[in-house]
Image (tube, rainbow, N blue to C red; front, side, top):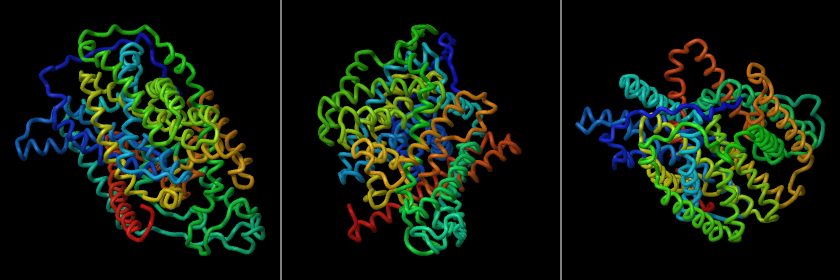
Length: 611
C-alpha cells in the first residue's frame, strides 16, 4: 500500500558542522570512479533482467572500507560522514545512468531502425537526458522534502546506514567484508560454476501430434526451464523478496511450461534448432513477449493510476508544512541558477532530439515540457512508496506521441527516453537529498555532486554499453541477453507505429487477455487489505517471467525463498548482511560478466560482426 506522508509532519534539522569537509576532490573522484564501475553492473543486470539497483549503500560501504584502510596504512585524513555522502550521491547518480535509455529505448531503436550510436553521441544524449532530471529535482526539493515532508524510503535507508556506519565503525567494516566476500563469490561462480542440466521431457499428450511439433520430443532446455542456477539471479531474488520470487515462478510455469508448448503445437510460435540441449528462447520469445509486455505495461499503468492523490498533490503543491530553516535557505541552490539550468536543460534536450534523431523541434520541446510534468509526478510517487515508475512514465509518453507523431519510431522511443531517464534521475537525487537532510549536508553541494555523477555515468556507461552489445539486433532478446525492457519498449513502439499487423498469429488475443489479467491483479494489490494483498501474485513479476528465460525465474525464486528463510530463522544475521551479501554477489558476477562480454564483443567484431 502507498505510504501517505502528513503535509504538516515536522522536519528536524541536525546541527551542521560547517568546518567538516564535504565537496572535496577525493569525494567527487571516489564517487565518479565507483559510480562508473557500478554503472556497468546496472547495465549488465538491466540487459539481463530489465532491473537496475540503487547503489548508494554499496558506494558508501566501499568508500568507507577503502579510505579507512588508507587512513591506517598511509595516514590519510579521516573519511568523513559528509564526504561519504557526496561520494554516494555522485556514485548513485552515475550508476543509474542505465535508466537514461541504455537498457531499453536506445537498443530498441537500433533493432527497429538500424541506427547505430557512436560513443560521443551516446554520452551526450544520456547526459542531456539525466540533466533534465537533476534540474527538476533541484526545483522540487523544498516542496517535497521540507514542506510536504515525503519519506523517500531509499534515502532514509541510506541515511540510517551511513549514520550507523560512523557510529559503529566495526559494524561498517563487517559489512564491507561481507560485500567483498559476496563479490568474490559472484565473480568466481560466473567464471567457474558447472551448471546442472535436465536433458529431456516428453511433450504432454494434449500438445503432441500437432503442427510443427508432431512426433517431436520437447526438452526442458528447449523451454528454458532447465536448472541453471545463476548466483546473480539468486542474489536478485534475495533482494526482491519471496512474493516476487514466487510470482516469477508462477509466471515461468504458465509461460514456458504451458502457454509456450501450446503455442508451438498450434503453430503460433516456431521451434528452434533440433536437439534436446538447445534453447528455443530466441524463436519462442517472438510470440511470448507480447502477453508478457502487455501484462507489465497494464499493471504498471493501473498501479500508477492509483497514485492519483500524489499526482494531484504534485501538480498543485500543498503550501503547508514545516517552516524552512534559515540554514536551508543559505544552502539551497540559488533560484537564478535553477532557472538558468531549467532553460538550459530544455534547450539542450530539445536540440539533441532534433540533431540525433530528426525529431521536429516543436515535438522535441513538447516532449521536454511533458517530461517536466511527469518527472514531478514520478518523484512524488517515489517519495511516498520508494518505487520510481520509470516504465510507466515512458509508456505514457510513448502513447502520447503515438498520437502526436504517428508512424515515427524515433519520436515514439526517444521522446519517452527523455521522460523515463529524467524521472529516474530526479527521484535518485531527491532520495540522496533526503539522506543529506538527515545528516545535515548541503543540498547545493549534493546537486553539484549529482552533475559530476551523471557525467561519469554517461562517459563510462556509454562505453560499456557499446562494448557489451556491439550488435543489439543480433545479441539482444536472446537467452544470454533477455533484455525484457528492450522487448517492452520495442513492442509498444511497433504497435503504435506499425499497427497490429506487426504481431504474430494469435498474439493479439494473448496480449489482450494478459493485459486484462495484469489490470485485475494490480487492482487487487491496491484494494485488498495488506494481509491479503501479499498473496496476490505480482503482475509485474508474472509478466517479466514471460519475457525472460525460465531459468532466470527459477534462480530468482530460489533466492527469494532463501532470503525469506534467512529473515525468518536468522533474522539478526540477515538484517545486517543479507542485502549486502546479495549486492556483492550481483556486483561481482556483473563485473566478471562485463569482462567476459567485452572479450566476446571484441572477438565478435574481429570476426567481422557489426561494430
